[in-house]
Each structure stands twice: as C-alpha cells, then as structure tokens.
View 1 (cartoon, rainbow, N blue to C red):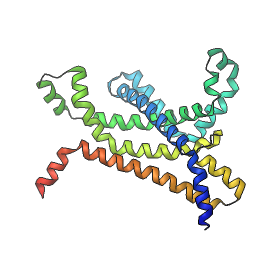
View 2: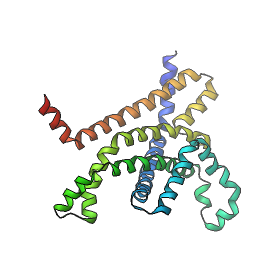
View 3: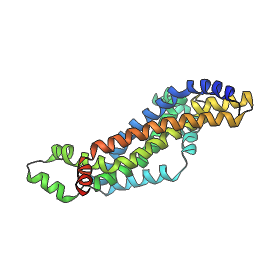
View 4: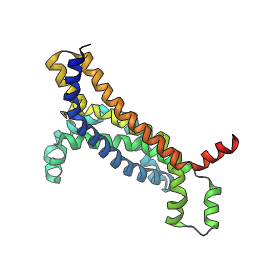
Length: 234
C-alpha cells in the first residue's frame, strides 16, 4: 500500500466528513421525533393508530433503504407537476433533502420499535408507586416513564445511530459528495480502490468509535443504581 497516496486520499475524503455528519445528525434527530410519536401511538393509541404504525414499520423495515432513496429522489420526479402545484418541488429536487427524508423515514421505523419496547419495559409497579406519590399526567411521564424508557432503549438506540452513520454512504447514489461519494470519485480518477476504501473505512470507524464512547458514557450516567448494586456485591 502507498502510504503517501493514502494520506492524500484522507485529505480528500475528510472534506466530505461535515456533510456525512450533517446527514446523520439531521436524519437521526428528525427520525427520533417521528419515532417517539409513532411509539406513543402504538402504546397509547387505538386499533386504527396501532394498525397504521404496524403498516409503516413493516413497509420501511421490510424494504431496502437504497430502494426507498431511489423512490424518493428519482421516483417522485415523475410527479413533478403535482409536486409543483403543492409547492414542495424545491424540496424533492434537492438531493440533500431527499436523502435526509429517506434516512429519517427509515430510522423512524426502527427507532419506533426501540422506543415502544422501552416504554413497555416500564413496570406497572413503578407507575403505581409514582401515582401513590401524587404524580400523574405529564409529570408522571416526564419524571418516571420517560427516563426509565430511555435507559432501557439506549443500547439499541445507540446501535441505530451507528447504522445511520454508515447508511449515509448511500447518499452518494443521489449525487451527494459525502465521504463515500468522494471516495467513488477518487477511485474513478486513480483506479486505486483498495487504498481509497481503506481510508474511507477508517474514517467511518473513527466516527463510530466516538459515538460508542458517548453511548457508553450515557449508559453509565443513567444507571447509577446498577453501579451501586455491582459495588455492593463485590
């Protein structure tokens, strides 16, 4: 391997890092908001709401993200007159927002199940104890249900964040020049795929290493009772 070329490739690919991080952060944030709404509908809603959430989750978990991105960016272009009448064509002709929409809808399907599992993991005894202390409504949800649900959902949610960072590589298929897009362009110019992809993989590994450390720190912060239990057993 040519280390000099790999360093030059790193300098080229790192220019796409801000776009990669922006895609991941925007899609994860928007997807989490949508996922929380879907999870609440699934847990608290009626039969119609639950059927809608199950259908949504089935469609977006059961079809490939790449196909979803193609359908949004390329497929919706067939309905340009209708989109222009609705005033949303500027959104759908922008590859960045199409990629964000596809990533957001996809991660929301997975995260809604994660959040639903976290909400359902809150035991009735904990809720009844909080009500006995005078809590109800939003105070009960904010002080008891939500923190416990977050603690249960955090490990799986951290995995989903990592998957979303890696999924941003698919944005290159809709002409976005993030890390993978720049890697493809560099390979087309140099015909040195191995070195370029090794550098690209190292960049993604570095990003995900930082994310895993942050998730571990949050788990440690949110689980003082587990630390106390482990200390008492030793």
